[in-house]
Length: 161
Image (tube, rainbow, N blue to C red; front, side, top):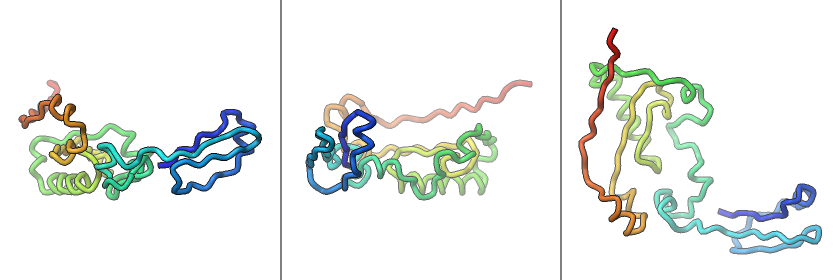
């Protein structure tokens, strides 16, 4: 990832020609008597970079739309999701949605996905936490988290009439 540090003056900023993003670690130039620097951020390390493939993923990779998910602003993301009746959870339709969600989640850098993220307006989430997701964290943080398996209790609330 390359960050451009330029003058804060709006007039000076507008006069600065667009600088090509090169592979150099640091480039400096003088424009209008003021200096600016182009610096390469540390895109090759850290846990996020590891989840993004260790290729210096950076923000542009993290912000990219994952195949199978809807884009920000999609109407399904702005409406409340509909409940799924407990009896419908084992239906072929709902199980197909869950299978699709798991597939999309595993292809993306993340540990969970909600059905509206794939365009389905239902209250369904899938979660998966693996050793891979914590292997990039510092050892002290891993030890402090005291990770262990647990049972997830899903409490279905149905209002009384």
